[in-house]
Length: 264
Ligand SMILES: CC(C)(COP(=O)(O)OP(=O)(O)OC[C@H]1O[C@@H](n2cnc3c(N)ncnc32)[C@H](O)[C@@H]1OP(=O)(O)O)[C@@H](O)C(=O)NCCC(=O)NCCS
Image 1 (cartoon, protein in one colour):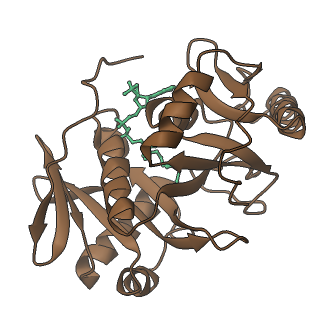
Image 2 (cartoon, rainbow, N blue to C red):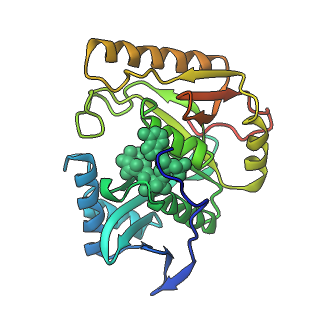
């Protein structure tokens, strides 16, 4: 890893005008619902994704916040630098969970723990709503996000979607395809403990090819290879339970049958 970082940044719970807050030296995370804060989230998303089209409009965020969604803003010295937002989801079997749609941190502030602090704040808010699973999607070719979601946070993935959002071109999807893994982050202790054991011995590994991000025929081959390897592992009933940055590899294992059914 490029920079050593303290383990789990502290987030101190607090309350401000009925809205839960969290802070740590250097940055502050607030749950927001005022329109100007939601406009900041929308602007941040447009800036991080390099496209106004993918940014959620403030009016949608307002409806989400009013309906019990979790809309979080991270600030440094009062300046918006990161966000996360999501809403309550429901599995076909009727189990409720928190569906996190997007989280982002300005490039110049990345790798200082703000992203993880946002996820931990989301986790705390979801648990307070009685939800013990958080779900979101990410591009399996992005090594950084794989490390962040599966290794740092401890999420797992057992569903893969080809071109989940169709063909899209923005700063984070410059290659056009939108393949996605669905991350399920179990927030309760029992499942976290069971997963910690499974992470010791992978039944299979899937490597992210080095050229996956290249806008070239070689890159296209690499993306197809990754797609095929992930689909094969999932077809065997395996779950991605970890990611190893050294080998750029997803680690797969078989979840116990007692584990909650996947969300989708
Ligand atoms: C994902 C994101 C929110 C993380 O925010 P952040 O503030 O940088 O997160 P943190 O500082 O808490 O942690 C980032 C981790 O990724 C690691 N990382 C950074 N670059 C990496 C790379 N090239 N390969 C592997 N890991 C990498 C960091 O070292 C850190 O892990 P560590 O604590 O084990 O060292 C941020 O990268 C981002 O905004 N990305 C663009 C938007 C996006 O992809 N959002 C997620 C999909 S909705």
